[in-house]
Image (cartoon, rainbow, N blue to C red; front, side, top):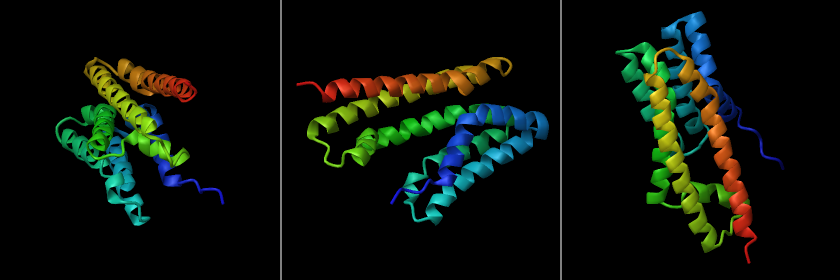
Length: 187
């Protein structure tokens, strides 16, 4: 039986990908306060929905610091809180991936075992290294996202967080896939 699509997760992924465009549109047409409310409501919903469906709470808890960070910054600077969302999300992803190195299996291993449940030891080592590479990506991506926040105007922020960050993630994902194919077919 084919697995059903998790509409809530798909909607949140879409929101995350389109966040820069949604944020600017919401601020322009609804105001900064409404944009912050939208972000906070969506994050809170994403925290609660999985728990209501029996998914372990730990799977969603990485969003809690993002929600708290946005709310805390919004108390002082509403526009800044909107701009910091990508920075907070990268920090959350970095922390999540790092936590899986501390308490295995690594994040990449978890994904790999979906396709290959009997992953050999060499695969476990490889996926650990892939997790470390992604941690480096999230650190660098978060730093560049922070740089874009500090630039005057919204252009650098929108171009980086709305396009270049996803292009970089796509290139890393594709590159890792190609490396993995080579490693798997090595004698």
